[in-house]
Image (cartoon, rainbow, N blue to C red):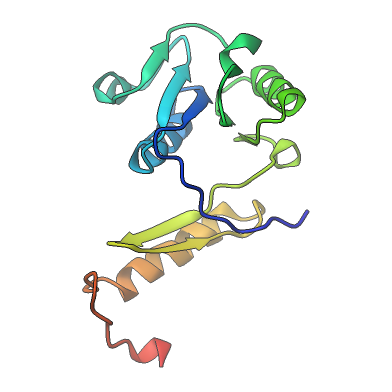
Length: 158
C-alpha cells in the first residue's frame, strides 16, 4: 500500500479518538497540538487525560460518535472495537487510522520532529515504527540547536 504524505490543517475541526490508553493519549496530544477539537470515547483512560481539553465520553464506542467528525482514530485495546470504528468511519467517508491494523488504515501518523515552524515527518509505511522513531530521534539530535529563522550548520547535511 502506498501512502501520500500530507500535512493537514485540523484547527478547530472535530476529530474522534476511540481509546485513551498510552497509544490513544499519544494521538490525542498530537491532535491537540494541531488545534483539533478532540472527542474521546473510552470507558477508561490514562490519568493524564483528565487534564487535557477534550470532550470525554466515558463509555464504549457507538457508531453515532462519528457524526460530524472529519477524522477518526481507533486506538482501543480491543481488536473488534477498533474494527467497528474503522468500518463505520469508512461507511461515512471519514478517514481513519487504526492502531492495530495497517490494512484498515486510510492514513498513517508518522514519527515527527518539530522545531518552531519546521516539521519533518518520517514513516516506514507502517511496517517498522521502531525504525521511524529511531530516525526521528537522530533528526532531533541533528537539529538540536536549530531555532526558527536560522539555518543550522550540520556537516551531515552538506
